[in-house]
Amino acid sequence: MEILLAKYNYWIYVALMMIGIYGMIAKTNLMKKIIGMSIFQTAIIVFYVSIGAKKGATIPIIEHGHGAAHAAVRVADYVNPLPHVLMLTAIVVGVGTLGVALAIAMSIYKEYGSLEEDEILERLE
Image (cartoon, rainbow, N blue to C red; front, top):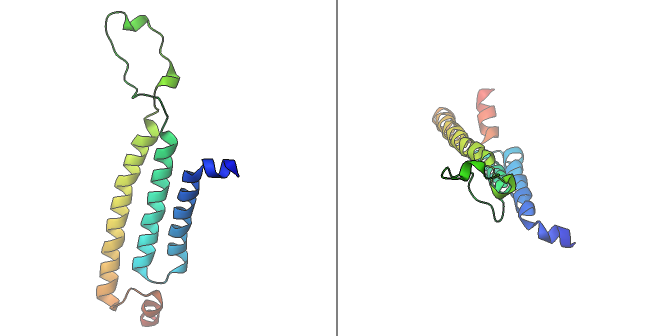
């Protein structure tokens, strides 16, 4: 039980991911599906950023100066910037995906007058 409470942040990520998946699968309104997709993307981004965090570490910039070239570099003292950089890219892709999804939802609403899947499918038949 102690292990479960120590990793409470992972439970929050899992809960957010499940809410997002539920919104994408179970809802019939296209806007609710888009919101579910956004929640799912946000949960994954926050999860990866939290994995990349390290207590007591510093940014990976090695000082160059007199005598610094001969000093040993301890990798454990630095934070790996790769997860954070990748998640910046994921944020940009997520914003682009959200924008395209909203634009498609607007054009569907203009064409069919509704965002409910059932009503759209009835009008298609």
